[in-house]
Image (cartoon, rainbow, N blue to C red):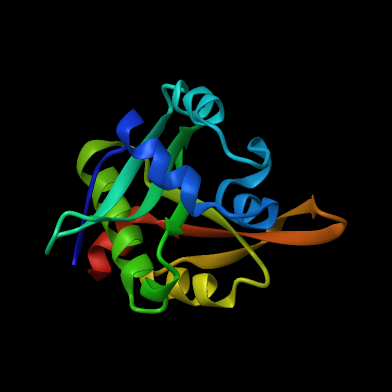
Length: 168
C-alpha cells in the first residue's frame, strides 16, 4: 500500500538518482527535461502553478517508492511523470495504485473531469496498467519523440472522471 504527499526539495535527490539515462529521463519526464536531470530543471517545472508533484511512499515504512504529477490545463488534468523508482517494485500493482490515488485527488479537490496521460507505445506494462484503471487510447492524438537517434511514439490515453467514479 502507498500514499501520496507533496513533493518537496528534500525529495529531489532521490528522484535525480533514480533517472539513470537519457532514455529513462525521456520515458519519465518527456521532452521538457535534458539528461542529466538537475535541481534547476525540477525547480523550473514545479514553479508552474498548474502542476502538482507528489512523492509516493510506502505506508509500511514511509520509504519513497515513486513520483507522480498532475498538470492542469484547459479544463482537463494530465497525469504524468509517473515513476516507480525501484525496478524490483514494478509489475506489482503499484502503478495502478498511484493512478487511482491521483484520480481520487482530482475528483476530491478539483473540477476537471477530462483526464489524459501519454505513454510510449513500447511500454506495454504501463499501457495495461492504465487500461486496467479505465483509460482508453485516443487514436486521434500521438506524439513523436527523438531519443538518442531513435524515434519513439507516445500514445495519448483518456478517461472521463465521472464515469470512472460511478464504476468504482
